[in-house]
Image (cartoon, rainbow, N blue to C red; front, side):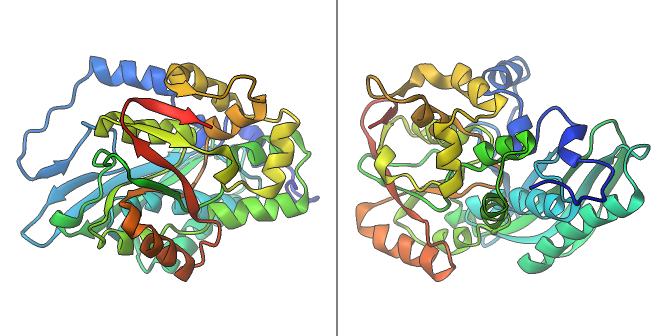
Length: 350
């Protein structure tokens, strides 16, 4: 599933990586942040860089806190409109992952003007605007530059009650782990770039990556939801490790329980992966325990970089039904329990 036959270019060929797969590798990022510590100089900064959370949260008053985040990347698909939709959906996800609701966005635009027709760039912007309209917010401004690789994303701003912020470092032993979207976006993007992805597989990828993680707002109201994040470029294992490290716990995950995009499972078994998969494993593989003799595709699935992936929720066992009901109510039919938080450290995949 590539660009239309009359298109003189493929967006995915204009950059070396795409979507959240072009994130800086987790190991390198940790070194960068260690060398440049960011200090919290305000008692009203409720969430900063301390736990690698999804967004910053700043208390405005007793009932409101500002959620601020930014996310942008290079093309993961060839269709300009779809690229804009995916990038915008991914950027707003961080607000929902904190339990908040978005109020406005600013556009981040970097385009190679010598390579792309203006109509293509306009279609990218239109795709992003359509998602913000679906979320009920305006794109109120932004910034644009002329660069070598196409880049698009948003600064997202939202609101949340200060007492209902859902951090990624508050999970408790015994919590159930629930994943809101199926895995495999990175694998499908690799198949797309290889020219082997089917039309049905492309439709599956677009359906997942353009679905706003709106259940996060309602989940923020539930006391039994202890921790929440979204699964993006570091893969399921990487983002679950952030919950584990911050909470001082370990996690058990069952491969048989993981929701997986149908065609992604096929390509995973064929060995189709992104370069970011190996970078992820090199960055945190020493904290992941796989069964002896586990096939390579299982490791690929848990380290696969997800662009605009699902919410990962750690909640009390007696809240599981309520969390799943909220996902179902909002059309997240793939949402399911995938494991549990346990004493110890690291992630055990069974």
